[in-house]
Image (cartoon, rainbow, N blue to C red; front, side, top):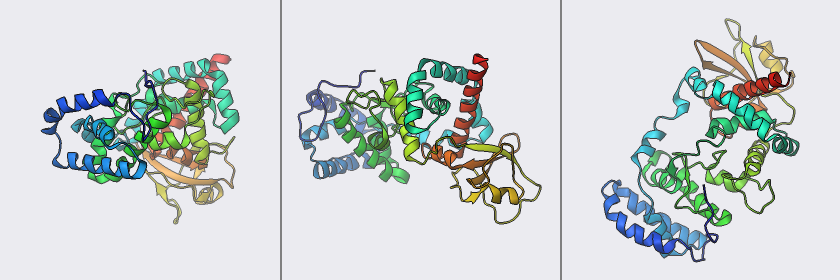
Length: 345
């Protein structure tokens, strides 16, 4: 996918695509207006005014760009039925599959040097980086079908429950377009506006993506070096501990001692030690450092399934705020590593 226009987009500069966008907007506005909620246009105009005042965008050019944004009811519908609402057993079946395990093994083989360099720089094992990219976009095979401009405008102007968050992401997206020479009209991503092979939301792209290949641009679509390095950098910035475990399956007594919080789908900050959990009757199936910070979670997969989660597990939940997601990363990464080990034997 070509994401780089002929010149960078930046506030107070001439945008090379502005004139055709103006013409297209005039043609489409009357058609789209009937499908838009009443507030969509007024919120869009208010957003333009805020961006002009705050960042110095050219009002006419930004208005033309934002007139190109289309309300998409399908995006609202997708937000109301997220994967993370599924039970753990159903969620796991979507991502921990023979196809993704095989894809992860190929990814490790194809990018062995880059993954080793990223591990040296950030401490994140190759199979964990691979698993995240595998879950996010099937190793770059599914980058998203929604125009990011439409997704973020729809959610920022017509999804009151989280409108403030997505307006901030739309702001970050337009700034990112100028910084990394991305065409904001054509770029596509997820229904929530995440982009590239690792599916970074725009604010995360700006804050955590790295130019790992040293070419002067952070390109999360076409540079596998930048993709791999950025996933490692993101986890490192969110507390990843080099060489430490992530989580262990566990068994529980019939009656857990009082005072132990048991988490569910939502992330739980590790606030107890492994020793405290063990004293309460929790039995991790793997040997863990008794002094390590830990939490206990319960998920549903043909009955209750218990895990002791550590700081590295919590770091993964900063990528996607769901225990289901983090545990899928754990299980897929282990399966990828096991397949790779078997292939070497």
